Image (cartoon, rainbow, N blue to C red; front, side, top):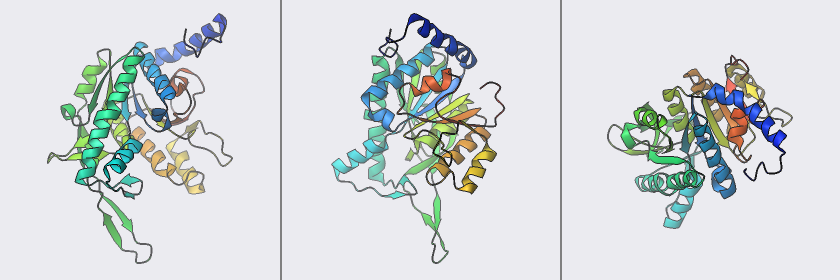
Length: 305
């Protein structure tokens, strides 16, 4: 028995398993894409619990697919190499030198650390990037900003920052039919063969839509979407999201996150959940319990979900 359940009586353990069973049946054979990053990735104890959760999903007949971030790790390596970083609208401006470092860190050390953690807790994983098996064809991301004084719109050159154009999910589908868990670095390639660094949330959303995933889980360093009193909102529809933005309840960096969640469900994913990766076993609590631990954004038509 795990250290997490040693303090429970046999009856309490049985009750936990009984509660989880209907949810295991609901998701059996379904694909769940998980964007993994933030504090959950940086804390070794939380990382091990996350990997154990993912292995449990696989053993339960669910097909987990992990897309990981690595912004802090990239930042530390750039600093070590003496390469300056600059951000525009939360995105790292990526020169040719920086994208080489990003690929090295994401596809190398970060990716293999997650793969090894899954191995350590008894699972099997394969680490790839969006460049492998034509998984992610991307293009350079274009952004513009309006000068508040002159009103002139200026195009922002983000360098080698990309956005997905097309996902070829054949390699993921092959792995899903096996006992192997895919662990994916958010690196894509353009038609011209350029390596492009892609925001992990964006990459995970595009992949979830292409896979027709049942769920997309976005692990963050916040509880989820909060109301005006600071309490967690468990469920939101697209209409409610826009109402909360208009009221100012959803503000700042949460606005693009929730709007990207809405876009994902409009593209066919049944539900997107923003949840706190700092909570131990957040993935299992979200999928296998009635209340969950995050904010689910969906069209609100899932019976009993």
